[in-house]
Image 1 (tube, rainbow, N blue to C red):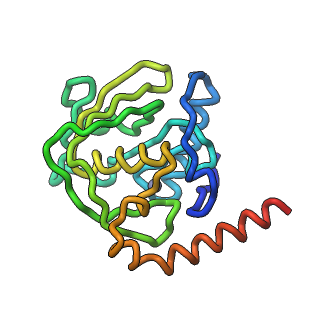
Image 2 (tube, rainbow, N blue to C red):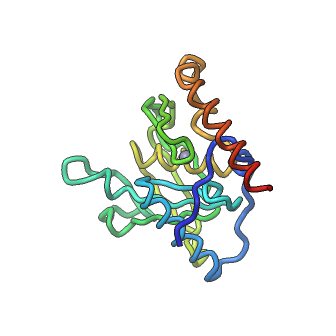
Amino acid sequence: MQMRITKYGEPVLKQKAEKVEVFDSGLEKLANDMFESMCEANGIGLAAPQVGVSKRMFVIDMRRRYDADTPCNFTLDGKSIPLELAMPLVAVNPEVENAGEYVETAEEGCLSFPAIYGEVERFYKVRLVYSDLKGARHEIVCDGLFARCIQHENDHLDGITFVDRLQTKELLKISAKLKKLKRASRDFLKGKNK
Ligand SMILES: [Zn+2]
């Protein structure tokens, strides 16, 4: 089932999401619904608060962004495996830490901020430890766009969006668009509460 994607200005995007305690068919359904919603919106990552669910969980599918010419460098539980075997990725109760020596600045967007982009600094390489849908813990070490996507989605679980990480100069460039989006969200919420 496709879910509506929440937009900037909606309170759920500002909340710290809650740890997942129960690994059941309901969680599996949520993951499937999040995937469907993400694919429909042409995204590569989506966090639960972006479908209005304040739980510590995100989904990622990097298959469309990597190919033979731009291979994805990563290990899953210490092993190098084909990307297709690791995707789609469902990460529950994730923990992310820097695993490299560099930061990298690149343009980011977000399904909760349609047509808004900005340059964000991120760790180039990260270690992600997470539970799968059965509750088993795994570890992914990766770099580049995959690492950037993990950091972006993980931020959502702490109520942080990419615009919170923009430098003032970058933020000024999109401030008019942000104001407009916030007004639209306010009007949407008003309509919903009637
Ligand atoms: Zn996002």
